[in-house]
Image (cartoon, rainbow, N blue to C red; front, side, top):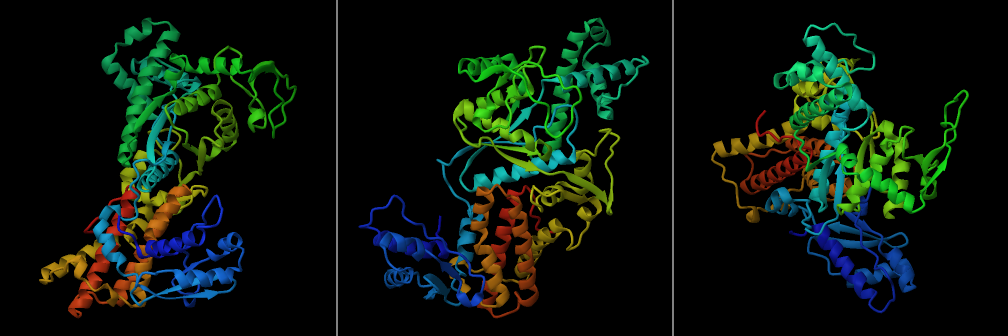
Amino acid sequence: MTLSLKDLITQALQDVVSKLLVDVETNKTPSVALTRPKQKEHGDYAVNIAMPLAGLLKQNPRQVAETILANVQFPDAVASAEIAGPGFINIKLQAGGETDILKGILQQGKRYGCVDNSQGERVNLEFVSANPTGPMHVGHGRGAVVGDSLANVMKARGYQVHKEYYINDAGTQIGVLANSVWLRIQELQDISITFPDGAYPGDYIIEIAKEILETHDFASFEAMDATSRLQKLGTLAVAANMTMIRSDLKQVGIEFDQYFSEKTLHESGKVLQLIEKLESDDLIYTGTLPPPKGKEVKDYNPIEQRLFRTTDFGDDVDRPLMKQDGTATYFAADIAYHADKFERGFKHMIDIWGADHGGYITRVQAAMKALTGLEKQPEVLLVQMVNLTRDGVPFKMSKRAGTFVTLSEVVEEVGKDAVRFNFMTRRIESQFDFDLEAAKAKDAENPVYYVQYAHARIHAVLKKAESEGVRLAKVGDVNTSLLTSDEASKLIKMLLVYPDMLETAADRREPYRIATYIMQLAAAFHSFYHHNRVLGVEEELMQARLLLLRATAQVIQNALELLGVNAPETM
């Protein structure tokens, strides 16, 4: 990968640091980190490396800075460097000194800003994991888009990411699903039924019932005992719902590396084996729990249970692993699942959960510490709710789902790109108001339209140049130092920070930064285009400006692809 000017300056300074520490005993050499000064008069880059060096060299920081500048071999694009304050080094570049990055962008293409690392850290990224009891709602969709975008940006920065969906196909909700389907099957046979409040009310249950009757005879179900019938219908209904969920995910461009069934944990005996292991390690005891915190429970009668000593590992209360009927709790299955991830070689796990699961984090991390010794695993990201509106008016009901608006319905109305991009315009910790009419608008107020229009506008200019007989010069022959206008400099600086932005987005697990960045980049492009004529100017300047446009289009396309959004050439 071609080194950027920033990388070359960093490397030059780091070389001096290493030489100054040749005779110094230290466990860690300080790393040079260039930053952008907030005030333009302070230069293009600043570095405070003299501060950490001063203690190691037992010298004054300003004296260390002077030694660094006396020995550093900066690239030619650096015009000057001076010391400020107690030892900061401010670096100024030649006019147009950073413009060569445009050539690097076009040479690297889709790999600009990416890290090629076959030995990158393996990460198990689990997200969505919606109960297989119905279609996905828009809240699931936000978590899905966040997870998929995070996987993309982490892969771009050299992580080896395994995307996983955990199917909660065991437990009481599957019994409710099976009973709901059985009631609808009877209804389709003109049998009068009473649909209870706790059943799943959506029309999709009728669709599943019809689908099952296409391949199974009603009489065969009627002949079964109740337990066998519900088990059979539960299996068929989960399969039907997972087909629907996979279709919903495909609509927003998401595929998983693995779908993992909770049911298989129970069938394989892994949940009971886990409990037995904890018993043998003396991590389970018989005891009682205090009443739930935050709520008053009248006549609370504590019951003796087999409890996991999670408080020994950071939890606020010990947790039961077995119910009164002798079956495993959901918590037992959940930690067995995470233990399975560890056994598959994943020492780093990231889970994306709904915001209502925040109280569950500590107990799972405590259990994993007890089982594996890992600290703060899994790493959990909580995604807040989506509030749907139409022209500012909230709505929540869907005939098909019964109680919520499905993700599929939203995608069908506004399109995949609008859904994916809009979901990424806010931090996941913030609730998101998603207005369907605004998401369809073709104006600058619609962020995805604004960004895609910038990309299409560039290609319109390139096509016009071609139609006028303009031949694009070879990248290496373009004199990019001519790009000296304020708007060009701002646009180039935006292109320069793209790799750093990706690194931050990956390391901080904040893929929303990509959407924020593209909107700022699009704004910088529109400003440049408004103030700088591209075609019809002197040939050398025209070629430089066309190169700037091509590099901008490449970065917009790269960033949009990480978000799973198209970069159209016409609109």
